[in-house]
Length: 73
Image (tube, rainbow, N blue to C red; front, side, top):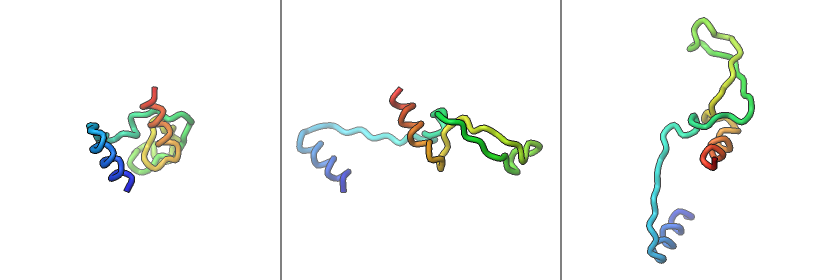
C-alpha cells in the first residue's frame, strides 16, 4: 500500500523514480561487532574451529544496521 502511495505522489508531482536491487548486499558491509561461530562440515579440516564472521550475513540481527551504516558512510 505505501509503495502505491509513493508512486501516486511521484506521478502527481511529475517526479521520476529509480529502483535497484543489490544482489548480495549484506556481505559488502563489515560487521560492527565481533560475531563468532563454530565452523561446520564445509570447512573441512577446520570443522569445529571457532571462527570470526567479518562481514554482515543474512540472518544476523546486526546485518541490516551494518549495511545501512555502510551505505551512509
